[in-house]
Image 1 (cartoon, rainbow, N blue to C red):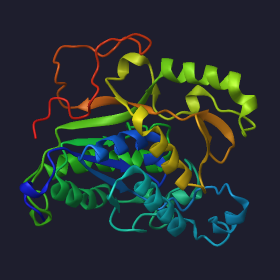
Image 2 (image 1 turned 180 degrees about the vertical axis):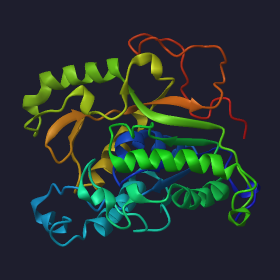
Image 3 (image 1 turned 180 degrees about the horizontal axis):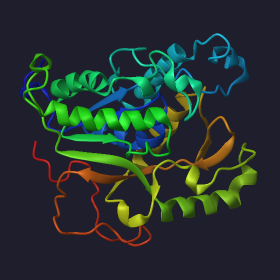
Image 4 (image 1 turned 90 degrees about the vertical axis):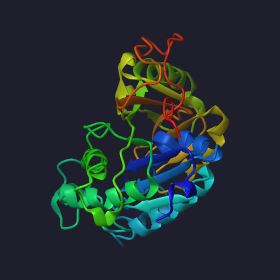
Length: 310
Protein backbone atom coordinates (compact mmCIF):
# COMPACT_ATOMS: atom_id res chain seq x y z
CA UNK A 1 0.00 0.00 0.00
CA UNK A 2 1.38 3.40 -0.96
CA UNK A 3 1.83 6.28 1.41
CA UNK A 4 -0.35 9.37 1.30
CA UNK A 5 2.37 11.13 -0.68
CA UNK A 6 1.76 8.65 -3.50
CA UNK A 7 -1.91 9.65 -3.78
CA UNK A 8 -3.38 12.59 -5.69
CA UNK A 9 -5.04 15.30 -3.61
CA UNK A 10 -8.55 14.30 -4.75
CA UNK A 11 -9.76 10.71 -4.67
CA UNK A 12 -13.19 9.56 -5.84
CA UNK A 13 -14.66 6.08 -5.36
CA UNK A 14 -17.71 4.89 -7.30
CA UNK A 15 -19.56 1.67 -6.45
CA UNK A 16 -21.80 0.19 -9.15
CA UNK A 17 -23.77 -3.02 -9.62
CA UNK A 18 -22.99 -4.02 -13.23
CA UNK A 19 -20.74 -2.96 -16.11
CA UNK A 20 -22.47 -0.04 -17.94
CA UNK A 21 -24.10 1.49 -14.83
CA UNK A 22 -21.03 3.67 -14.31
CA UNK A 23 -21.01 5.09 -17.84
CA UNK A 24 -24.75 5.83 -17.88
CA UNK A 25 -24.84 7.44 -14.43
CA UNK A 26 -21.42 8.99 -14.00
CA UNK A 27 -19.48 8.82 -17.28
CA UNK A 28 -19.03 12.57 -17.65
CA UNK A 29 -18.19 13.01 -13.96
CA UNK A 30 -15.59 10.24 -14.10
CA UNK A 31 -13.99 11.62 -17.25
CA UNK A 32 -13.89 15.15 -15.81
CA UNK A 33 -12.16 14.22 -12.59
CA UNK A 34 -9.79 11.79 -14.29
CA UNK A 35 -8.78 14.53 -16.74
CA UNK A 36 -8.19 16.90 -13.83
CA UNK A 37 -5.80 14.45 -12.21
CA UNK A 38 -8.01 13.06 -9.48
CA UNK A 39 -7.73 9.38 -8.57
CA UNK A 40 -10.96 7.83 -9.86
CA UNK A 41 -11.59 4.30 -8.64
CA UNK A 42 -14.53 2.21 -9.88
CA UNK A 43 -15.66 -0.92 -8.06
CA UNK A 44 -18.22 -3.00 -9.98
CA UNK A 45 -20.00 -5.61 -7.89
CA UNK A 46 -20.90 -8.19 -10.58
CA UNK A 47 -20.01 -9.04 -14.17
CA UNK A 48 -23.62 -8.47 -15.31
CA UNK A 49 -24.09 -12.08 -16.34
CA UNK A 50 -27.90 -11.86 -16.45
CA UNK A 51 -28.13 -8.91 -18.84
CA UNK A 52 -30.11 -9.06 -22.07
CA UNK A 53 -28.04 -8.89 -25.25
CA UNK A 54 -28.88 -6.33 -27.94
CA UNK A 55 -26.72 -7.30 -30.99
CA UNK A 56 -28.09 -10.47 -32.66
CA UNK A 57 -24.56 -11.63 -33.46
CA UNK A 58 -23.81 -11.78 -29.74
CA UNK A 59 -27.09 -13.35 -28.62
CA UNK A 60 -25.29 -16.63 -27.92
CA UNK A 61 -23.58 -15.01 -24.91
CA UNK A 62 -26.88 -14.84 -23.01
CA UNK A 63 -27.30 -16.67 -19.70
CA UNK A 64 -29.81 -19.13 -21.19
CA UNK A 65 -27.40 -20.03 -24.00
CA UNK A 66 -23.59 -20.02 -23.63
CA UNK A 67 -23.73 -18.09 -20.34
CA UNK A 68 -20.60 -16.25 -21.42
CA UNK A 69 -21.86 -12.69 -21.07
CA UNK A 70 -19.97 -11.87 -17.86
CA UNK A 71 -16.41 -12.10 -19.21
CA UNK A 72 -17.52 -10.33 -22.38
CA UNK A 73 -18.99 -7.46 -20.37
CA UNK A 74 -15.76 -7.22 -18.38
CA UNK A 75 -14.06 -6.51 -21.71
CA UNK A 76 -16.66 -3.89 -22.53
CA UNK A 77 -16.04 -2.25 -19.17
CA UNK A 78 -12.29 -2.12 -19.79
CA UNK A 79 -12.94 -0.44 -23.15
CA UNK A 80 -15.33 2.05 -21.53
CA UNK A 81 -12.78 2.96 -18.88
CA UNK A 82 -10.21 3.72 -21.59
CA UNK A 83 -12.70 6.16 -23.13
CA UNK A 84 -13.16 7.87 -19.75
CA UNK A 85 -9.46 7.93 -18.89
CA UNK A 86 -10.02 5.84 -15.75
CA UNK A 87 -7.17 3.45 -14.98
CA UNK A 88 -8.32 1.99 -11.64
CA UNK A 89 -11.33 -0.27 -12.09
CA UNK A 90 -11.96 -3.42 -10.09
CA UNK A 91 -14.58 -6.08 -9.45
CA UNK A 92 -15.73 -6.53 -5.85
CA UNK A 93 -13.74 -9.44 -4.42
CA UNK A 94 -12.27 -10.11 -7.88
CA UNK A 95 -13.98 -10.88 -11.22
CA UNK A 96 -16.84 -13.34 -10.80
CA UNK A 97 -16.80 -13.34 -7.00
CA UNK A 98 -20.44 -12.23 -7.01
CA UNK A 99 -22.88 -13.05 -9.78
CA UNK A 100 -25.56 -10.81 -11.25
CA UNK A 101 -28.80 -11.55 -9.37
CA UNK A 102 -31.24 -10.73 -12.18
CA UNK A 103 -34.32 -8.56 -11.81
CA UNK A 104 -36.39 -8.42 -8.62
CA UNK A 105 -38.27 -11.65 -7.99
CA UNK A 106 -36.23 -13.72 -10.45
CA UNK A 107 -35.08 -17.14 -9.27
CA UNK A 108 -31.51 -15.99 -9.91
CA UNK A 109 -31.83 -13.72 -6.85
CA UNK A 110 -31.11 -16.72 -4.63
CA UNK A 111 -28.76 -18.86 -6.68
CA UNK A 112 -25.39 -19.68 -5.10
CA UNK A 113 -22.99 -16.77 -5.50
CA UNK A 114 -25.68 -14.22 -6.37
CA UNK A 115 -24.77 -10.76 -5.13
CA UNK A 116 -28.23 -10.31 -3.62
CA UNK A 117 -27.61 -13.34 -1.39
CA UNK A 118 -24.11 -12.27 -0.33
CA UNK A 119 -23.27 -11.86 3.33
CA UNK A 120 -23.26 -8.09 3.83
CA UNK A 121 -20.19 -7.79 6.03
CA UNK A 122 -18.20 -10.24 3.93
CA UNK A 123 -18.96 -8.29 0.74
CA UNK A 124 -18.32 -4.99 2.52
CA UNK A 125 -14.96 -6.33 3.71
CA UNK A 126 -13.80 -6.63 0.10
CA UNK A 127 -14.71 -2.96 -0.38
CA UNK A 128 -13.09 -1.89 2.91
CA UNK A 129 -9.77 -3.17 1.53
CA UNK A 130 -10.18 -0.84 -1.47
CA UNK A 131 -11.26 2.13 0.67
CA UNK A 132 -8.26 1.79 2.97
CA UNK A 133 -5.89 1.49 0.01
CA UNK A 134 -7.27 4.34 -2.10
CA UNK A 135 -8.47 6.57 0.78
CA UNK A 136 -11.23 8.37 -1.11
CA UNK A 137 -12.68 11.56 0.29
CA UNK A 138 -15.83 11.07 -1.82
CA UNK A 139 -18.02 8.03 -2.47
CA UNK A 140 -20.73 7.86 -5.17
CA UNK A 141 -23.34 5.10 -5.31
CA UNK A 142 -27.13 4.57 -5.40
CA UNK A 143 -29.79 5.40 -2.85
CA UNK A 144 -31.38 2.75 -0.61
CA UNK A 145 -33.73 1.69 -3.43
CA UNK A 146 -30.81 1.27 -5.82
CA UNK A 147 -32.23 4.03 -8.01
CA UNK A 148 -34.94 1.79 -9.41
CA UNK A 149 -35.27 -1.33 -7.28
CA UNK A 150 -32.89 -3.78 -8.95
CA UNK A 151 -31.63 -6.23 -6.28
CA UNK A 152 -27.97 -5.74 -7.22
CA UNK A 153 -28.31 -1.97 -7.08
CA UNK A 154 -29.93 -2.16 -3.64
CA UNK A 155 -27.17 -4.50 -2.48
CA UNK A 156 -24.48 -2.22 -3.95
CA UNK A 157 -25.92 0.62 -1.85
CA UNK A 158 -25.92 -1.54 1.27
CA UNK A 159 -22.38 -2.78 0.71
CA UNK A 160 -21.06 0.72 -0.03
CA UNK A 161 -22.67 2.25 3.06
CA UNK A 162 -21.55 -0.62 5.30
CA UNK A 163 -18.01 -0.50 3.91
CA UNK A 164 -17.78 3.24 4.56
CA UNK A 165 -18.78 2.59 8.17
CA UNK A 166 -16.42 -0.36 8.66
CA UNK A 167 -13.45 1.27 6.89
CA UNK A 168 -13.45 4.03 9.51
CA UNK A 169 -13.56 1.55 12.42
CA UNK A 170 -10.06 0.82 13.72
CA UNK A 171 -11.39 -2.37 15.29
CA UNK A 172 -12.51 -3.86 11.98
CA UNK A 173 -10.00 -6.01 10.13
CA UNK A 174 -6.78 -4.10 10.91
CA UNK A 175 -5.12 -6.50 8.46
CA UNK A 176 -6.85 -4.55 5.66
CA UNK A 177 -4.96 -1.37 6.46
CA UNK A 178 -5.27 1.75 8.58
CA UNK A 179 -8.80 3.08 9.16
CA UNK A 180 -10.08 5.67 6.70
CA UNK A 181 -13.13 7.93 6.96
CA UNK A 182 -14.93 8.95 3.75
CA UNK A 183 -15.94 12.59 4.13
CA UNK A 184 -18.77 12.86 1.59
CA UNK A 185 -21.22 10.27 0.25
CA UNK A 186 -23.46 10.96 -2.75
CA UNK A 187 -26.42 9.21 -4.34
CA UNK A 188 -26.91 9.33 -8.11
CA UNK A 189 -29.89 11.56 -8.92
CA UNK A 190 -31.71 13.33 -11.76
CA UNK A 191 -33.92 16.38 -11.03
CA UNK A 192 -37.46 15.76 -12.23
CA UNK A 193 -37.62 19.09 -14.09
CA UNK A 194 -34.47 18.21 -16.04
CA UNK A 195 -35.82 14.77 -16.94
CA UNK A 196 -39.22 16.13 -17.97
CA UNK A 197 -37.67 18.80 -20.17
CA UNK A 198 -35.39 16.26 -21.86
CA UNK A 199 -38.23 13.84 -22.50
CA UNK A 200 -40.30 16.66 -23.99
CA UNK A 201 -37.48 17.28 -26.48
CA UNK A 202 -37.23 13.55 -27.12
CA UNK A 203 -40.93 13.41 -27.94
CA UNK A 204 -40.41 16.01 -30.67
CA UNK A 205 -37.27 14.30 -32.04
CA UNK A 206 -38.27 10.63 -31.78
CA UNK A 207 -38.99 10.21 -35.48
CA UNK A 208 -35.41 11.16 -36.32
CA UNK A 209 -33.93 8.49 -34.02
CA UNK A 210 -33.40 4.76 -34.67
CA UNK A 211 -35.59 3.90 -31.68
CA UNK A 212 -39.12 2.52 -31.82
CA UNK A 213 -40.48 4.53 -28.94
CA UNK A 214 -39.62 6.57 -25.88
CA UNK A 215 -39.13 5.48 -22.32
CA UNK A 216 -40.84 7.42 -19.52
CA UNK A 217 -39.40 9.86 -17.02
CA UNK A 218 -39.79 7.34 -14.23
CA UNK A 219 -37.77 4.77 -16.19
CA UNK A 220 -34.70 6.89 -15.45
CA UNK A 221 -33.08 5.69 -12.21
CA UNK A 222 -32.85 8.20 -9.39
CA UNK A 223 -35.35 10.80 -10.63
CA UNK A 224 -36.38 12.93 -7.65
CA UNK A 225 -38.08 16.23 -6.96
CA UNK A 226 -35.67 19.05 -7.66
CA UNK A 227 -35.05 20.18 -4.05
CA UNK A 228 -33.57 16.76 -3.20
CA UNK A 229 -30.68 17.35 -5.60
CA UNK A 230 -27.73 19.18 -4.04
CA UNK A 231 -24.99 18.90 -6.62
CA UNK A 232 -24.58 19.40 -10.36
CA UNK A 233 -21.49 18.36 -12.33
CA UNK A 234 -21.27 20.00 -15.73
CA UNK A 235 -19.76 17.32 -17.95
CA UNK A 236 -20.48 19.06 -21.25
CA UNK A 237 -16.79 19.07 -22.17
CA UNK A 238 -16.75 15.29 -21.70
CA UNK A 239 -19.94 14.49 -23.61
CA UNK A 240 -18.07 12.64 -26.35
CA UNK A 241 -16.15 10.55 -23.82
CA UNK A 242 -19.37 9.57 -22.04
CA UNK A 243 -21.07 8.62 -25.32
CA UNK A 244 -18.02 6.58 -26.36
CA UNK A 245 -17.95 4.78 -23.02
CA UNK A 246 -21.64 3.95 -23.33
CA UNK A 247 -21.07 2.68 -26.89
CA UNK A 248 -18.34 0.39 -25.54
CA UNK A 249 -21.10 -1.43 -23.62
CA UNK A 250 -22.55 -2.57 -26.94
CA UNK A 251 -24.30 -5.67 -25.60
CA UNK A 252 -26.40 -3.44 -23.34
CA UNK A 253 -26.72 0.01 -24.92
CA UNK A 254 -27.45 1.55 -28.30
CA UNK A 255 -26.35 5.18 -28.55
CA UNK A 256 -27.65 7.82 -30.94
CA UNK A 257 -26.50 11.10 -29.40
CA UNK A 258 -28.18 12.81 -27.58
CA UNK A 259 -30.29 9.70 -26.90
CA UNK A 260 -29.71 6.07 -26.04
CA UNK A 261 -31.71 2.90 -25.45
CA UNK A 262 -31.29 -0.27 -23.46
CA UNK A 263 -32.48 -3.69 -24.61
CA UNK A 264 -36.12 -2.55 -24.60
CA UNK A 265 -35.25 -0.23 -27.55
CA UNK A 266 -37.02 2.69 -25.84
CA UNK A 267 -35.14 5.96 -26.17
CA UNK A 268 -34.10 8.07 -23.22
CA UNK A 269 -31.90 11.15 -22.85
CA UNK A 270 -28.14 10.88 -22.56
CA UNK A 271 -27.38 13.39 -19.82
CA UNK A 272 -24.00 15.11 -19.96
CA UNK A 273 -24.63 17.17 -16.85
CA UNK A 274 -24.87 14.70 -13.97
CA UNK A 275 -26.64 15.25 -10.67
CA UNK A 276 -26.23 14.04 -7.12
CA UNK A 277 -27.69 14.19 -3.63
CA UNK A 278 -25.21 14.72 -0.81
CA UNK A 279 -26.31 12.01 1.62
CA UNK A 280 -23.47 12.26 4.14
CA UNK A 281 -20.99 15.02 4.85
CA UNK A 282 -20.87 18.78 5.05
CA UNK A 283 -21.60 21.19 2.26
CA UNK A 284 -18.93 23.83 1.95
CA UNK A 285 -21.49 26.64 1.85
CA UNK A 286 -23.18 25.75 5.11
CA UNK A 287 -26.75 26.87 5.51
CA UNK A 288 -27.32 27.33 1.78
CA UNK A 289 -30.33 25.26 0.70
CA UNK A 290 -30.32 23.28 -2.53
CA UNK A 291 -31.80 24.91 -5.60
CA UNK A 292 -35.58 24.95 -5.58
CA UNK A 293 -35.64 24.17 -9.28
CA UNK A 294 -32.99 23.42 -11.85
CA UNK A 295 -34.91 25.71 -14.17
CA UNK A 296 -33.54 28.52 -12.01
CA UNK A 297 -30.02 29.28 -10.91
CA UNK A 298 -30.28 28.66 -7.19
CA UNK A 299 -27.18 27.85 -5.17
CA UNK A 300 -25.87 24.31 -5.33
CA UNK A 301 -22.55 22.48 -5.36
CA UNK A 302 -20.73 22.22 -8.66
CA UNK A 303 -17.87 20.05 -7.40
CA UNK A 304 -18.07 16.75 -5.49
CA UNK A 305 -14.95 17.84 -3.59
CA UNK A 306 -16.30 21.20 -2.42
CA UNK A 307 -15.25 21.75 1.17
CA UNK A 308 -12.73 18.87 1.10
CA UNK A 309 -9.17 19.78 2.01
CA UNK A 310 -6.48 17.67 0.30
